[in-house]
Image (cartoon, rainbow, N blue to C red; front, side, top):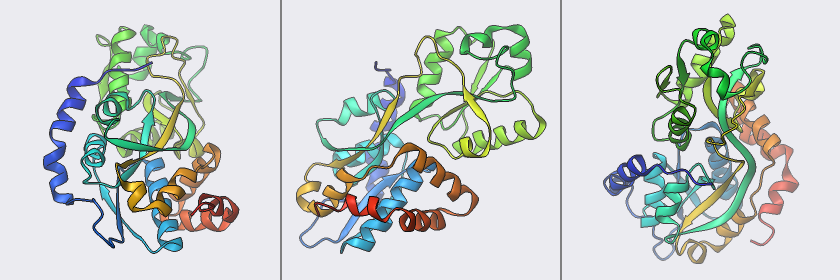
Length: 295
């Protein structure tokens, strides 16, 4: 199932060339030892990308330069060769339109983790017999408790585009506002609600550290507008595997079980990404060895 985001995606990709100009070109010159990866400050993407950077730098002769950019800019940057790669391609639904525009210009090295899920989430203290499904949001009593608002994340995210379609599909536009913010603003709103035991609906996904901190549940989505289970892939520019075969092999082998990743993300939230990554590497040496088995 694919969900179209043409206007937003088109605008993001049209502006990508200008935005990427400050990055320079990632195309490898002879003897180039620096690999440039794009990333966005989503908790899963930050952990996985920084973990990859650290193990690549520890086990190879290459250094990794991280460039923060929006999702649309990353896809176009990899397609143009301005970035060597990105480790956060949510497929098949979430980034469907981004992927459709660049899939012939990039290489997919494989899945980093799978079983990821997008959806609308509520605290578990919200009675399930009153709010269990997105359809329940039509109830007057539920609308009053929730405050007529669905707390979202950054407007360019695929989850927000799917949420806009969900608002329309369930007839919620007259009664609710889908509020654009950031991932941090979403979790801050959830933290405030949890403290007061207020009702709240947020757009979210797994893996995410918030599921380690609070007892939460996804609302059922009988219309399936928020997509099916997702896998997150490593996507690189054409020619990357020829230029950096050792690293391409490592990224192809890199795989993290969802439960491990989510626990590590919560650890990063409690401590720091640096400490959590160091602890992950120390705890999973055989797993990381397997990523380099063909290098």
